[in-house]
Image (tube, one colour):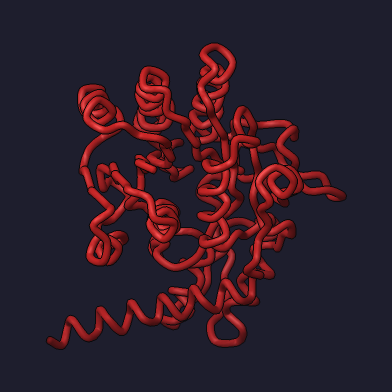
Length: 322
């Protein structure tokens, strides 16, 4: 198939691109590199002639129109977005324009050219889980940040195109995803930041009391979920969760990563009003509809992520000595 991946140079996007290339498709990757990095896909571009990279912005309507007019796409994976909760609180306009208006631009072209779209949403739209069961797709939503609000707005537009125009659409809500190629600085995820600090002998810093929980999904499992939702007609018009199916407190995660190598500190929360106390995924719908379930447990995923961060540190060290 001819497939467009927006945000394909980002962390999850990189792994979606790899999965699609492994499956033999021809890809067009659109990314403005505001959050993604060309280094994420340079290796993939090096060994495959089935990938074309376009640096551009989903808010650029003319660019999007030209892209869809010049290529007959079979499928669109729409991952491009502003994803940082704190940034959305500080600058909600940027997040809304990227996540809601940008999605509208892509939707319009998918409608005009009859291209199925898989929209990447987030678990951060949910209200907290109950203590007894994981979050299903029917669980109440709570836009506790402009990021969550923008994603809910975009989701509603995506579903409206399914009902109003019969456009094949899928909304995917992966839970907190981690793994190789995730940023290890302030924009990264908690696992990558914790591992990076540990390797550098720095304390692991926890926002608030650390009792908040996360359901942590390894990135290759996430990419397989996203890709399979695009392949499956049974997913059309549906919202699908993906997660490990078990949650862990940030305190326990820090202990698991730090071992006894570095101290653990609690610091003032930067956005307590947007914290979700308990996130735990019920992925039974994805298992039934697209035959997906996770394969990589948390300990194995942390091990793989740590090995990757170590390898990049060694690579950077080698470059500095060349």
